[in-house]
Image (cartoon, rainbow over all chains, first blue to last red; front, side):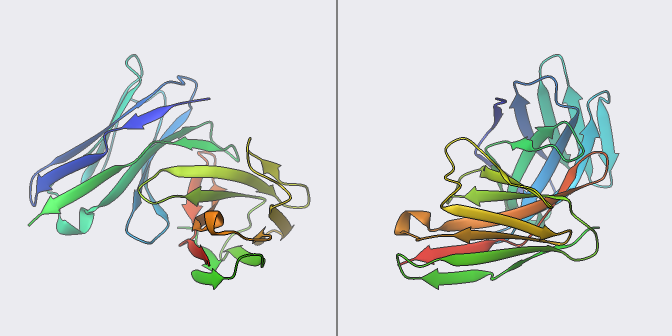
Length: 111
Length: 115
């Protein structure tokens, strides 16, 4: 099965940009997703990118996809304290197919 | 966006008893739902895929007789933890895929504690 790896922890100062990285092994993933999980809650979909795209921007969020290196990143501009959470990348085929989640990156925003 | 609810949000039960967790899609129909288990500071572990009107598909290593899944309607899937033991204590989350991209909408999770 697919392996999806992320660094465990990232600490940034409020107002700075955050970059969360993800590497995956299965190049057949059609869609790659980013989810946010706040403490004691379910996951919230932030954005996703189709595998034939290199970049997608959505307000403060920018997703970059490097298919050659199987690397996905999420950049959060002007990081706020409310962005403190665990961020998961995931890959899947779309539709009703299951997805594989990464190990999660805990983002800590320092005021 | 699509809304998924879970009930209960927290449950404490005694060892040996059974617990039922409900997952509902509130504003859309979900022919497929996923059940996950999450350990502290760990990623999500997919337990099973719940299919409306048919049997659930369980992941390798998940005991289907212990974790009973029923998806009797297009808006409700239930997970029953039978004969619960302390090692079943965990955070259980359901989700439903929506759209061509299969983006998943998650319930708020259920914290199960078995004493």
